[in-house]
Length: 231
Image (tube, rainbow, N blue to C red):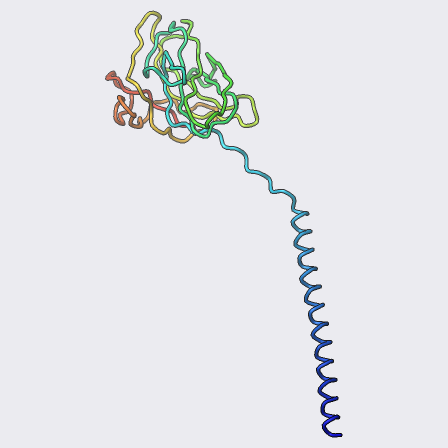
């Protein structure tokens, strides 16, 4: 009888333990399920993250030229052209390009920074890199002197960005153009606002071929025009 009582007690205890274990498992599953539901609801409430705005293309070279190849690359680089040169080109080698408009704006050096010549073109992103050449008309109306010319991304659009500029010399009508050789300025310095305040030459980055190896661009020995940083 004692053996039977002992076996009955053990059996009863095992049943109670099994029941408690089942209740614990059910509670754990409920907690996990509730947490998963809460996490999923939080993700839905947050929605899709706002994508970062696309950056404008990066300018590797900026060149003023009078002729371009079929791919937009410059045929020669110029620091001076006559006022009646006809069509000149602001040629830029870009990376990170996408479908957009690109413009060139030739400005004076007055406090008003008047735009004296302007043109824009449609550009296809293609492989994302390559040359873009924006033509500008030189009809002989500009007085001799130094002028900045700006490269603009998406003019008039939400992503409008005045990227970089360079300064070149306009000579009298009929004067010769001054060439500095193929290639252009290496990576431009920082861009800035549309004020165009910094128009003095400053230090010139070394050029890919030809150029002045870092001189200030003021001499007459074939120096490349400096790329102008924005503020």
